[in-house]
Length: 195
Image 1 (cartoon, rainbow, N blue to C red):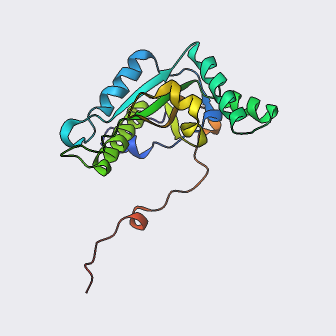
Image 2: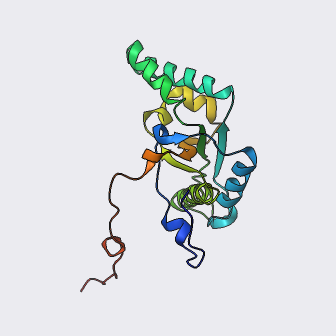
């Protein structure tokens, strides 16, 4: 972890970057660290206090079961045995995976679906920022697996959607970002009303 400048309250946040599963090493966050990350997620802006999300840590023996599900999903998608084995190994790449599951209520009388999705995004951002503050690195992943029937059935109850996975661990030496972020002025401007 990069040592944060304590004179700048944003220093820790401004040093955070995404690290993919192949560049993560042990140790992974402990159960207590995961609880702190969940606590941070619960402090994200959440219109109407819905908490339209939950996290499921995939630890211990559950990792091999997830690998089985990845392999099953690959075979159902028509991939050959070698590709299915590659998908299986992806479930085991990072020291820890955490499933992100959304519970969006389309008929909620106060919070629109859009507002609920914003709350999920805010919670995920706080979760990742807390991981970094605790000395861990990671990345959010999604893709075809979040729609694969065997995987979805294993993680989601009625009315839930699998959003993706947070991969977590400790950043290895090759985990630094490989692309340059845009400057703040490239993503921030003043709005000008139409004439």
